[in-house]
Length: 283
Image (cartoon, rainbow, N blue to C red; front, side, top):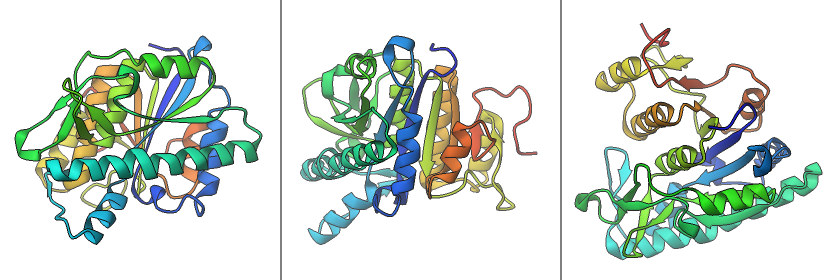
């Protein structure tokens, strides 16, 4: 496990991916957060992304069905190439370009390199369920993040799309929150930030819950207060917190404010705690 100021994994999702020009100030904040990166000191930044809205848009234009089960995209064999093309191609290249432009504008030396989960054997993936088609999951205890460590040591910022590869080389669509959690685990990251469209996880009263434990999260999910994609996100965050010991937070990616506040040490968003000792944020 890295010490203070160690590796941070940031998952970018939701509307943050829709208009990188409008959100240029967010990229600048992320670029500035990378300024101390360098694997030799155990520090660095890794960005992980999905891009579900861009995939939905293309599938719609092609007249292909979009189906989700329990917040996860069903990915038939005839769609995995399209999904991979959007995520590994269009979205990944867009994010690399946006980061590099923001870094140059901020006077930051770090530059981004685009990858997918299958590159360099950073993590091992397998098919999650026949019912979901070409949907995969990151395997426990597999992969050492090798290519990521090489890039971090050289001062680069890896930007990783959530496209994995099975043992047979077949493409797999991985939930981006799970992808980020898997990368945080293999790297021993000290912080995992899940950026989304909302300020954090909301309780029954509509207010952002500052802290969630396994017990309090379970109550919200069972009651249907947290459901769909947010339930998937919370479960993934809980798993990451339990398996890595990293500080895990869900917060808004709408503009640079929340991320900059978090990096500076302020209490924002919803912190996910991997144990039930202490306050859980929900009565």
